[in-house]
Length: 504
Image (tube, rainbow, N blue to C red; front, side, top):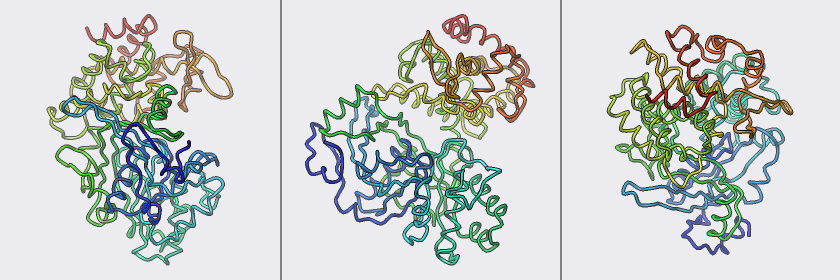
């Protein structure tokens, strides 16, 4: 039996399942969401669904699929999906919840249904835009065409949607939107606003529209923090299906911890009313809407995401496949702890007490050890170079500002990144590395650059000096190149030797 609205009354599971109240299906569409990924569904859509079930937010989501035109996976399940929440509570006891999420009303494919997406701009109930288009999504496309169907970039699509909104309501102040990007880049809302305004100017759109953009809309910086690894492996999927008694191709699994910190004023807070059902500011849990969220963002970006980026390639090349495996191994778990506590926490480029950072780091180690999550290391390597730049290079620069010396564990993680980018074959325009005789995809745009560099045995200084990658010349950091070269050599001998050197 497939999960669908028609089949909801027939569900007979061996575990408690929270099913949607039928009244939820009659709620108006209030959110336009760019992105179909598990993070949006497992965190943002989770909060919306939770509020709807309690009669608080009372609105559903139109999801925009930006790539491809196949929405059948969502359509055949009437946009329903199951969220499994598994982890350990503060008392160490396991927590397990099963929720059928009914927050999504429609999924529209931008390439084939752009007119329907623009039609949403005429809906007076539509007040919110959310997005998660990865770190590379919030960038200015120099060749963007706002008249295209659809525009190529996410900011281009958003600009075209807002222009349609402005025209539909004659530029009324009340028709302004609350826009909450969740891409993991500093000042995501501020940067998105700048790009949208620039695209409007380059597109020669009306001055009144530009003024409406600036005065009637709220572009909110935000931070999302929840580990949602992706689709379960086949074994776990079969186990969940047996427990639930139905098939769900969209099922996602997440940890218990959840945080959506949003920078906004009272107007934003009134529109995003779903914070009323899940907000614990003291413990940084739930939806937190404040005028300054830098503290939350820096802790998460530098410690959780920063440590993931510096360890994913290293642990994968050493034979591991999931984050929790690296926490079971005493050597790699010691490495991530020392990296986080001794090198990353003191170098956060924001005034946060070291003890606060280390306390947050300790909670992360517990989350990384969650026995119920299969957070694949290869999934973290997506856009590896961009992540290293945005998450880690600021920490490296701050470390040098404080100490003037090369951070050993950071250098090892960086060297592993360089080695991970070593492609041994190219097929269909895709680059593949090799680990223990098995090939792996290198899901990163600079893979071609590295293929050329490795093929001609280029100098490491070329990597470190590529300002397009890092925004600065890392050769200028005394001793960093030498330490990266040292660990790169050790890694090629054996990852164990590299770990031993970094932890000695």
